[in-house]
Image 1 (cartoon, rainbow, N blue to C red):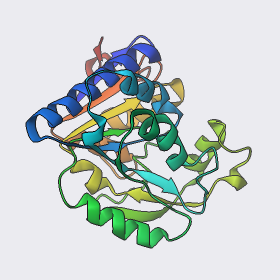
Image 2: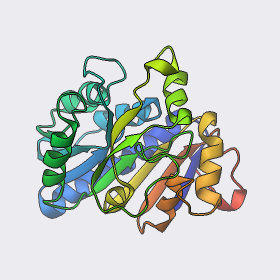
Image 3: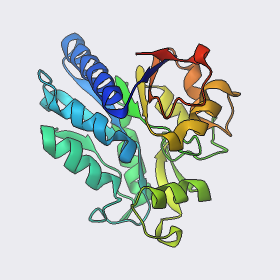
Image 4: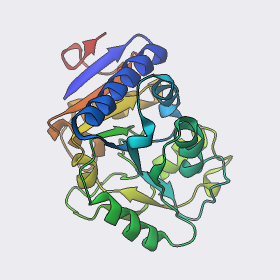
Amino acid sequence: MQVNVFADKGAMARAAGGHAAASIRSALRSQGYARILAATGTSQFEFLEVLTSLPDIDWQRVEMFHLDEYIALPVTHPASFRKILLERLIQKVGIARYHLLDGVTDPMGTIRRVAGDLATAPIDVGFIGIGENGHLAFNDPPADFETEEPYLIVSLDEACRRQQVGEGWFSHISEVPARAISMSIRQILKAKEILAVVPDSRKAEAVRACLEGPISPMAPASILRTHPNATVYLDKNSAARLTPATQVST
């Protein structure tokens, strides 16, 4: 796994966006289509802004899968990950093939449908974040490293729910849904390539635990260190607690 550290969030987003665009273009050239995983959350906004601005990507041949979504949160709510993906990615570039997770009307039916579509071909590149508690998607600690199910209905821990309040999506933890649909850890790891974009000082302790601590379900993103083609993009704030040996400064 490669860890790249940048002076600020903007430089990190430009580098990660350029890498992501190159990976999509490569898949389009080699096989005629690209399949991607897309994360949301405020940590991804600058990255998505860069990626959607770059030229020479035929988004009509890109198929997008959704990592996670709250149970019982309508798509009209500002915190809805479906809403964020529609506004900041899908509608912006004209992706025609996308698979969003509806956690309102029939969560189990959604899981079966999207899982079936997901199984038809490998994911070329996954764009993910790391939570303040080290989660990947909504796999909070202790994460299930063993299940082969592509999607799970999970309970969100207090740290995860407080992160959503801290990011401004909800005014109080009581408003944050207690459950969500999440892509499983093993399914995320099946992507041919993974790019983790993780800015801000509030992620520094999670970054340290996941990149320098034990590979453990208690630090879910630590499992990325087992992936043969994963790159982590940090800014100086999120990398602040890493030892110099872990960092490749850019």
